[in-house]
Length: 567
Image (cartoon, rainbow, N blue to C red):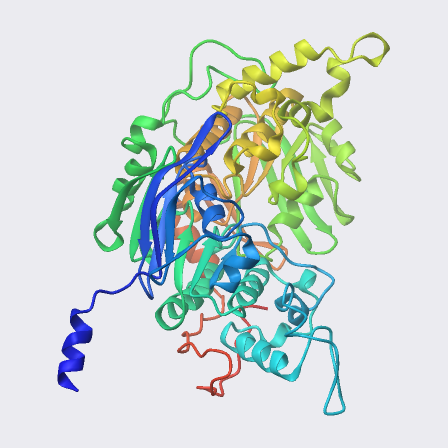
């Protein structure tokens, strides 16, 4: 017995996943260049890098959504080459992608079972009991046990469209875990989540890795990566350029590895001077411009504003040159307020005054005419047309500006205007970008195109909802600089963000929202990351301690009811 234990200790640990010299080439691009990495059992491996560094291509290869040109993948020591995502799932590799893949009109239970094989989950009757869509009794038991450990029991019969994004994200994780994976890839799982939701998600991920499956964690939030992960792999230009123990890695070093230099050296001149009318001037902004307190005239005033479904008695004032932040947890009414100002919500009482004139914003058309610009939270779903070109996406609201006699487009002028802004916003690859399909670009580049759209439009009131969601650290600095430049040129800007650090860096005033109302305001020296974080967390429910993981089919370890945190 003792000799067996000694032998077990000496036996090398076989990685759950071992990637060796993986390469993938697309026309004109070497997306992966001899990438090698491994994931140990019960490990959380962080995957960091710029948009375009190769992270998405790598995860496509690991999940069967693409096939490498060369190299090997070993799963539990056995060579494997996935033919499809379903093949990867069959072999124990699952992914939870960044976009929310849920069907709003189905219940939590039904969404958990999406994609399950019909041979395992079939409709009908069992022992005389009517079964719901896709369910045998074993399926019911598996889903209910999974829901218990993900704190989702109370929402199994609730339509998912009514739930908070953190709950929808947990449903996606549960759906992947019902396949019993050995390895699960989480791609930007905390995008648009506030601090309490992030902590709730982490309370699920940590025991998941400890007791059940290894995790590859992809995120641009460096603090999260250092807090959660055991090791960090950094990619740049399709290569793995660093592998670090997260326990001895700090944020500054990680930022430098991602950008290729100290972060401060990357925050250089972004635009030569792009004003709010889309004109380009010589010279450039300071890379380290401080937050600009409002000093100009009032451009927007909301007085006791109420709107369906969540905005309640909001008083708000915005001045030229001011960046005003809106903080709060998801579901606090932040996005609802922006959509009210965008004319996408029904105002029930109160009034909106734009540049001293009471204004009715009954539609986005009204908002555009009043000089508003809106960059929505769900960029892929609500801000871009993936199959259209970059130029078409940028100029869509302003087609008449580029129309000649008879309605024919002055294509050369359109492409020239768009290309100038793409260059200044550092969209990559730049060559031919205006003609390229926007869906082929990374999330960071897509956000830059949406910013270019409103730079072309001459708006002077900008509504940013999670402006850097899913964007890497280098591109974030570029977006921050554009926001500062817009303010410097006289625009009034409202920024909704789930990241306290982002609000502290950009804003001179921050309103905290809860239940559709502004409940606290921070201004001047009080606008700090710690103060914003404390304000968001204040009054929230306590995050429950995670229970040991129990796989499907095993006995319950606790009779504790799931908390309300995920509902």
